[in-house]
Length: 570
Image 1: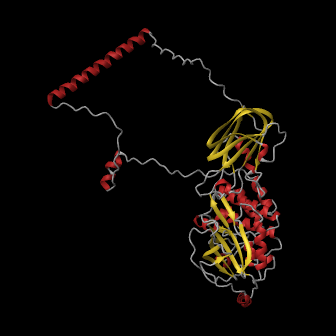
Image 2 (image 1 turned 180 degrees about the vertical axis):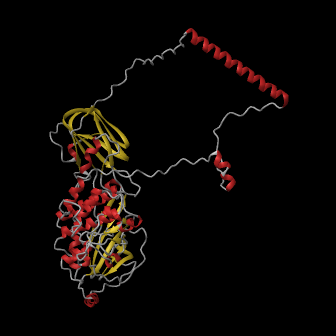
Image 3 (image 1 turned 60 degrees about the horizontal axis):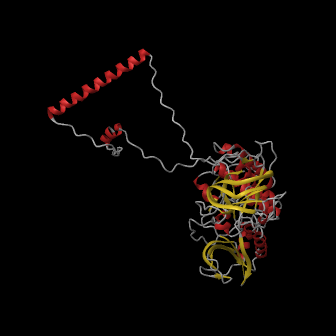
C-alpha cells in the first residue's frame, strides 16, 4: 500500500539538486509502505476518510523565497509541499553555504515527533548520513536544517541510465547496511530508505538523507524497525543489480517485478533471473534481505533480520575488483593506402598522413649524365657485394672464427662505495588510528591488510570528507604498524593515490600502542603520492604511525585518502 500524500504544488527542480522529488510518496513505496502498515500508521483504506484527514491537516503559513528563519536561513526554492509540511533549499547567511530546510507548523500533530527525531539524528555524527545541523521551534514554525549536497545524485536518478556494476552495488550495500547498523545501535531507524533518500556522492560513495526525520514527517512507524530497514536495503540492492523495483507496481522511475505481494501466486524472481550477468553472491544477499514467501527459495541460508547481519555477510564475500577504467586517450587512426585510394573514390575524405622527418632527397641529374651515373653506382654496388660474399665464404672454409668484441670494463668508482640497500622490517599487523572519531565503524578497517600485501591494485581508504583538512572535523587520522617487537628503523615508504600529506611517527619505548597522537613522536613529513620519509637517526620502536594530515581532492570535489602500500626499513 502506498504512503498517503497530497502534493499541493510541484515547483521546478534544478537538475543538480541532491533531493529526489517527493512524488515518491505517491508511488508504491515497497518496504516503507509495508513498514507503515506493520506499525499501524493511520492511513485508512477509505478514500473519503483520507480526504477528510487531509483537509483537517494544519496549513503552514505562507512562505516564499527570501523569507528568513532564525535571522540566518534565507529560503531560496521550495522542493516539496506535502501533508502539512514543506521542504526548501536555503542559504545559511552566517556561514555562506547552501542548506536544506524542513518546515511545519508548531501545532502540527507530528511537530513534536519531528523535532525529537531531528535532535536525535543530529547526535549520530556519522558521515554516511546527511547531517542535521539545527532543529528548533520559532514563531510558530518547527524548522529542521540539514546539509545540502549540490553535487550528490539520488540513486533513483543514477538508475535511470542502467544498473550499477557489481563493485558499486557492493559498496552501496556495505555503506548503507553499516550506517544503519550504527544508527540502530543508538535506537534510531530510518523507515524510509528508498532510491530517493540514498545519494551517490562519487564513484562507489553513498550517503543517506532523512534518518528518522523523513519517517517522522510522514507519520511512518513500524513494530519491527530493524527488519523494515533491512528489507529496504534488500530492495535497494535488488534495484541496483537489476534496474527493477522488487514490487509489483514499480516506483521511483523503475519498472516493477511480479510477485512478492501477499496475494501473488508467483515468487519473486531472483536478480539473476531478471538480468543476465548479475553477481551471484550479491543476488543471494538481496533475496535474503527481502524476506517474503518464495524470496529465499534459492538459498538454504536464513533471511536477514538486521542490517548488521547483512553487513557481516558482505564482509565475507570474495573481493569484487573495480571495473577497468575507460580509455580516454586513443591514438589517432591512420588510413591505409587502400582506404586513401579506393574509399576516397566513393566520397570518403582521406586523412593526410604526416611522414617522419627525413633528410632532404638528393636531386637527380637529368639526361644521359644521370643515366650513366645510375649504371656506374649499380655496378660498384654489385662488385662490393660480390667481394664481400667471396671473403665470407673463404673465412668459413678456412674455419676462422669471427673476432669477439672486447669485454667492456665496468666503470671504476672514484674511491666511494655504493650505500647498502636498506633491509625491510616485517609488519605483523595494521590497525586504524582515529583518536578524534565521533562515530563508530572506523574508516575502512577490513582493508587495512591491503597496504602490506604488496599488491598496488589494493588499498585502504578513508571516508569521504566534504572539505580540506578533514572538513575541519579533525587534525588527522592514520594507521598504526605493529612490528611485533622493538626494531631499529630509519625510514618509511608510503604509496598513495593522489597527493597526500603524511607524517612518519614512532613510539619509542611503548609496550602497547598509544591511544593519543601525543604518544607518537614525529620523525619526518612529506607530501606526494610516492613518499620516502626518513628519521634523522635510527629509532628503536615497535609501533610506527602513518599519520595523514591532508587528503587529495577527488573528481567529485570531495576529499578522500587511499594508501596502496607501506614499508618500513632499518
